[in-house]
Image 1 (cartoon, one colour):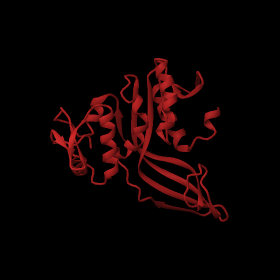
Image 2 (cartoon, rainbow, N blue to C red):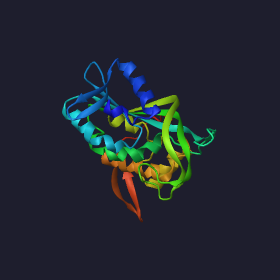
Image 3 (tube, rainbow, N blue to C red):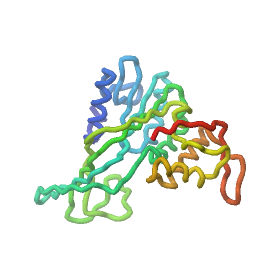
Image 4 (cartoon, one colour):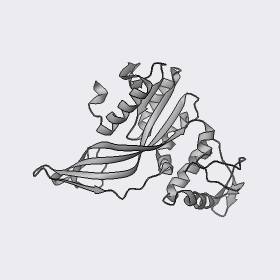
Length: 245
């Protein structure tokens, strides 16, 4: 039960959903690690609501044991902020301006480069509407993970799943190719790539597009073939892609 102590409601909800789907068992010790879900066929499902990179070593171990492993990562395409005043008990709720899409996840994917193309590894991105729970504090405080640059008068206490949406399954090169925009020319710059990507996902950020290019380069879907001024020129041999958005 050690792993359940710090679980958010979001993590528990997703773990329950996937455990039922595979008729598996929760919190099973395997080697030095505890698997979120162990399926009847010996495969493992890990739910990760935080940084994906934290699961790299654990995943590498399970892969070394010749087990299939799926990491499920909820992508907050809609987010609400719920703040409770501890003194009065009053709860306020507002919608966050946060706007994420499938391309937002490449910032996290960079940490998993060593295992992305392992035949027994799958990354499942599930769109989710979530509520972030906070409690108001009397004075500005540092976050529990010590990452705040400036103290704030609230503390995050958890995340809650409201509903799920579309699922993106990333397994093998073909799944990543499906995320590449249509009509990509044989050679292109990062600016060209970003402009085409925006046609399918208007809210995509330039940095997300650049990180996607970096990942695609690392898994050898595209390659750098030259420079145009200060801009790198990329190339791919595959001209036709299926856009999933």
